[in-house]
Amino acid sequence: GGGAELVLRLHDPALVESSGLAVTRGHDGILWTHPDGGTVAQVMAVDASGDTVATVTLDGIDPYDPEALAPGTDGRTLWLGDLGDNLEERPDVSVFRFAEPRQLADRTVPARWFRFTYPDGPHDAEALLVDPVTGRLLVATKAIGGAGLYRAPARLVAEDAGTNLLERVADVPSLVTDGAFLPDGRFVLRSYTTAYVYDRPGHQVASAPLPRQPQGESLAVDGDSLLVGSEGEDSAVYRVPVPGGTPASLAAAASEGPGPDQPGSGEPDRRPVGEDPWWQAGRVARGVAALVA
Image (cartoon, rainbow, N blue to C red; front, side):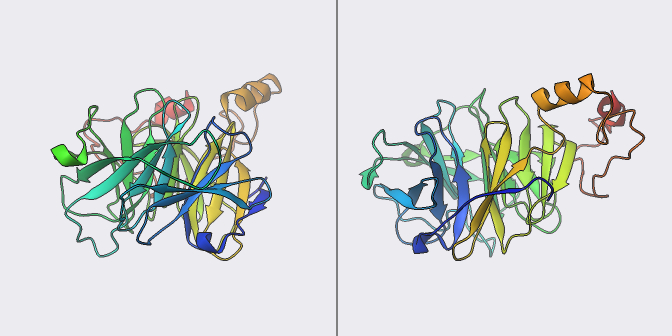
């Protein structure tokens, strides 16, 4: 994709299957990521050189298939999504919430365990998002067709008290591998090849191709740009612009006149056909007028 900048490479052999990325306010210059699989749930802190400087192990957790990592609303909490289900046979999926250590060192930390069930049967998923305002969790499933965005209840019950029923709120593009919220309340979903921006569930407002990666599975928001990573040995993490721009960049562009992605430029919307589905088309207007406005 245009404007991609190589940030670092993940040198740790334990991160050959890096599946999630997160940036928090707790430690400047640190990127959090994690492997999928294994008999322990671990999250690694990676510095600007790509070296692992701390491995955080979640106490007492034997995961099934961790696939996603998301920052909490306070800037120091992390949520690890054990959402993978390639055979679509799990009766429920799990998410673990833990506090980011204040000192970067190898350590074991306690975690809160939450179980979730889908209203329409098991799904494979690799994307977990935490709304920065409400704190509610969103899960985007991964499928070639019929994938959906699911919202967790506002109040969660812990694993020892039962399960939390997810609610389907929108369709999502095929093969979503990660997602994250932007500071302005929009959110981004990524597939292996493309980043999609939404201003609300089901309403896509921009998209852009991502850099070619062996198996692009991770995405994080870092300030006003995105970080995207991949599985693979010595895999690269790239910084890319937010598709459609940020409020600051749009304001600057507006002061200079219409650009190629703005209304009035004569350029068409380049969203792929069929990649902006609506789950409840009868209840939600198509949104073309709103997009132009």
